[in-house]
Length: 250
Image (cartoon, rainbow, N blue to C red; front, top):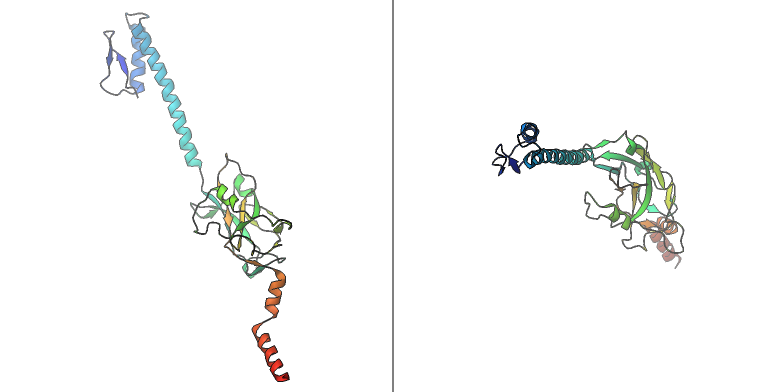
């Protein structure tokens, strides 16, 4: 749109009183330049120069606007989602399973439609399996920054082996994947929240690609296997049975 000074047929430069479109002004300027008695006068030169400048500015603004619009339309709301829950309770050196002994499954979801993303480069990405603090996203917010997720990743204690051992990567196929054999090597009594979560994130993040929100399980404690065994074997009935035997002997 043109809202600048305009050349009149008198050769004077007057203030325009209404907004002209580029299609209205450009032909007039060129025609006026060609037929004007001013020859190569300043007025003709100004008209042609202004029109060309406006054409370039208009094209540049239009290209930027189209680029932003396309980027906005192409943005997708993608997230990883665990499709089943962990079987509890969890103890060290015990394989992680889903409820009912099922494999733990993860899927790439389009959050706007709820559908699994089965095609495109995102549908075959690799994921890393990590351990999170149990108090990560304790308010169950819908979104978080990748940096927040990473700041809650738990590493092994000093002098200990890897906290989680097994297959720590998952490859999606048509948007779906299954976790391999995994087990904890240490309990959760020493960390801040006294509990853990299993988290999954894209293995190779790139700021140029679509943001894919990470997945997480519910929080859970992990006990030492030997402690759990003692607890299971030393039941209440067994305890009272031993007391009764002791009374009889006395």
